[in-house]
Length: 433
Ligand code: NAP
Image (cartoon, rainbow, N blue to C red):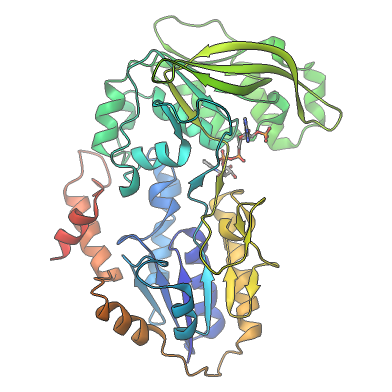
């Protein structure tokens, strides 16, 4: 038997485990280790709570977790409960699927003011991630600024705009639902440092903004190039730009306003003890399509600033790291002999959930070349891990444990909601005691 450990049970981890199980067809044992007691990573904690159809991919992952060759080992933190060096003595190969859960810094003055949060924290808060359960974002002002023109920025704008009724059928956590319901925010400005043709938003997600009950999106026609120029865009971007052009209608004052502010580069955040305004510099594009400041600045009122400018992978002691890319240094997934990276930890935070599937299969192929199926490396694998965890009094969780948590969450769900997520370690572990 070969012994493998995949660290991180988000999409990249699950697809890699699926690929390894197929490649080794009963001749390998695979442990899928997560620092949280529950599986699914980004699917549970990143995908928006009102996008249940995307979250449904976890049903496919369940089949993987229930294979004989696979074990889910939750509540084990690599770095504190067990080190990478220890895992490497226990397993033939260790595959890091740890994602990119850390917010990239804006690097501007005022970033540390109360009222300024990164999207990892904000999204984690409304999605019930235990690290962000107490974030308590400041929703008491009239205006919010969201920095970035990607899909995460869209998620945040939509979540800030929806009514309580529009969250029916979602699994948004109660603490966020109540706080958002009491929010005073009326204007949400989406700040893009480049123009409508340079957005990273996809059409379906952008189209959703046009169907909100109590909020209306608005983009200034003056920010758009002549419509003939849209023909040269990739089809996806062209569709997105068509949605944006539709957002040129006059504002309905009874509704919240989602304003697209293009060609605006964040310069600093100002306020007396908390965020009150975002100062931006007007930009134009150079020949290469990069944003260049014009020297003209102005203020966008914002008592809440959410930066949605991308993520990085936290480094792990002893593992080669690519500082500029914010991910593990790797060559097509290989970090060094017996150590691999996959998903966002390998290539950075881009692509859809599905992008991680070919990625996982590719890395599993590399592993299978290095450790021929049918051979045995004499490694202790899961038995060795269990002994080590027991000696450290670490209570790991199994997939059967997760099923019990899942049943308890389903039972406690609001009417029409799939689950009432437990948010704290103690609640998860209490359910299992
Ligand atoms: P993203 O797509 O890379 O977008 C990041 C945005 O931030 C870009 O508009 C970028 O502008 C801007 N930005 C970067 N640095 C900046 C700075 N210093 N100041 C101002 N703006 C800055 O990242 P994301 O939105 O975090 O999404 C991550 C991945 O998850 C993407 O692949 C996304 O499609 C995916 N996702 C998908 C869904 C969905 O399918 N429903 C939902 C959420 C996320 P420039 O272009 O000028 O660099």
